[in-house]
Length: 147
Image (cartoon, rainbow, N blue to C red; front, top):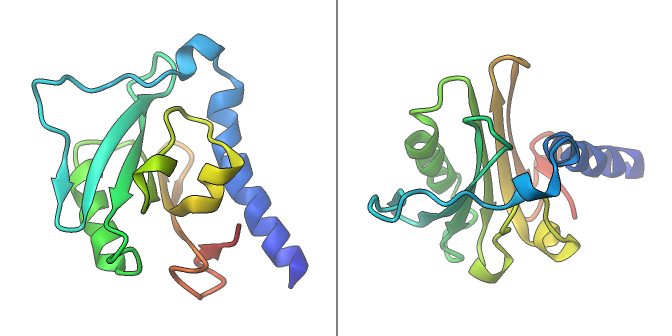
């Protein structure tokens, strides 16, 4: 059991490392979307920022979920549907329920990781599509990570 928890935590950690480890520090800063366009939002969620992965056209999207609805998987699905629909090859979305914990950059602090409610990764080139929730959101050990 402990090996599984450690394995899932390590897996989540490894997913966040490759992009940040390969990029110079100057490329880890958020690239804000144009202020003339409102950021996507919906019932129970809103996009706080999108951080560009280096010079690629790929982003990690940081989303705030309403804390009263953070156990409602439909809210996460609605956010993914709206945010990822224009990204056919790569989409990565991280979810928090407190704005003070929403990461500013690709990498995040231990406190931000502990507050992470869910993470979605889609990478067509790597044949990866995975949605993982904090175990406090979804108790199914096959779908969750613990902090």
